[in-house]
Amino acid sequence: MYRTGKSYLINRMLLSREKGFGVGPTINPCTKGLWIWGAPVAGFTADGEAINVLVIDTEGLGALDEDSNHDVRVFSLALLLSSYFIYNSVGSIDETALQNLNLVVSITKHIHIKAQSKGEDIEPEEYSKYFPSFMWVVRDFTLQLIDEQGEAITAKEYFERALQPQNGFSEPVEQKNRIRKLIKSFFPERDCCTIVRPLTKEEHLQSLEEMNIKDLRPEFVEQMMLLRRKILHLSLIHISEPTRPLYISYAVFCLKKKKNNKRNNKTR
Image 1 (tube, one colour):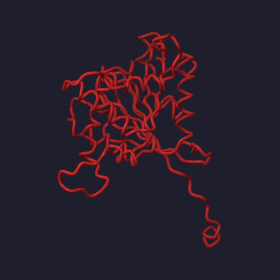
Image 2 (tube, one colour; image 1 turned 180 degrees about the vertical axis):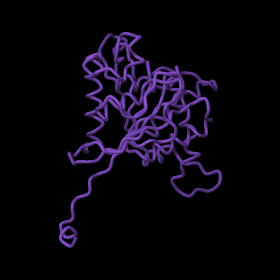
Image 3 (cartoon, one colour; image 1 turned 90 degrees about the horizontal axis):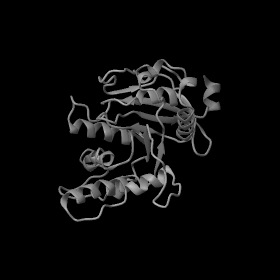
């Protein structure tokens, strides 16, 4: 399954409407390039200052008609546009989900933060000064968030556990741990949120866009609204995920409102 409803989530969660960005029930993607919603959404910074949130829907990563270089360029541009980056996937944070983020290995080839001599390496921590905070949204989540002792854990703790290095020194293990290390180095400020499936009946999913919000699972609506409040009380935001099975991408960023200049207003 190539598409997982990222545009639907953007329409419901951030635009508060049934229809907005293109949504379809087929395997064919609706988005190519970057699409920006025509009107800003009201939001606030962490300090309570009013901001205008501009919502961008981007094409998915990992599409069959694009190569990995294209994916990295889209991913890199999204990072540079944002101060809060939301990565959306389906199911759980397992090894496959982490390996789908292997494009972080190639980011430094497309983003240069300073002049450097040929062959000179820049530490990943240097890039973190220019990269946004990272939020991983796990969609259609069905697992219990508990540890080995049966104690409840948060979604953020679940994410951090997945980033723990694997034991071993083989080349495959080293590659897996490199991805984990880069995620932690690039995004020292990171978080996670889990959301249940919007409906329990499979046959209704293809007409999800037409359904009233009162017909959706109450748990989904509650979790979606909690995530909305968290997003709209931050500054620049980006949301992204790949379009390979289980993944897709989208973006959001926002701008502070300019204060009125009384002197300029008098002279106009």
